[in-house]
Length: 271
Image 1 (cartoon, rainbow, N blue to C red):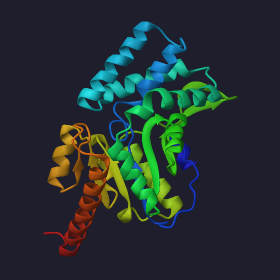
Image 2 (image 1 turned 120 degrees about the horizontal axis):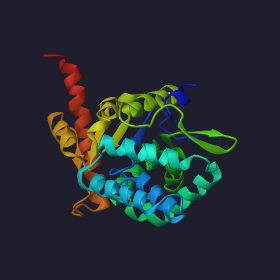
Image 3 (image 1 turned 120 degrees about the vertical axis):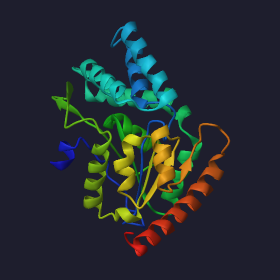
Image 4 (image 1 turned 45 degrees about the vertical axis):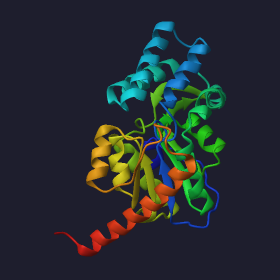
């Protein structure tokens, strides 16, 4: 199935009024501070799933992630380590671990401004999906706790209720996110020109450029430059200077301005 090939599992959505519109949110450094996968690793260490040396490696990568954003070498290193450690663990255990990780480590790290944006989309009747390299079990917990429509995440291979240590497809990252969102759009009948996408990382430019309303949140340097060159709205909640309501109002206005600009550009045609 296409969903399996692209490592995307979709939580069923409830019916909303604006059936052709949706918003897609990255998780790490966009919805929350830091990387959710590292908190999963920390919880696994607490359960004595691996050694102190391995835990220190995870902690160092988390520090670098917070300070400089995504680094593919670190992402793949953590993925490979996590897959090895997850082999033989039951799906039910990971689901329970996801609940604990959310309560103890993720909830307090969610950016109020980003949460307000997601809630605004829900209020006006749009579907809201998380799109993340985080394991689908954890992504689904985050989505459910926040009352969102569903989640797309990285899928681990399961046999007899246990993880094998392999992936179904590949990690849901970079261009793979755009592919997964296109699958959802085709299945749900979404008009991507009337959809929103939010991310902090230049790795998600393929996702951001496929929707009519790209919005940049807490960007890395490369994405900030790209957003400036393309007149995309940019909001940074890391400084604490923007309250959730101010961020919401600014993003709403900025998205509308960008939509008008994009439409005008199409009307003018290529120069």
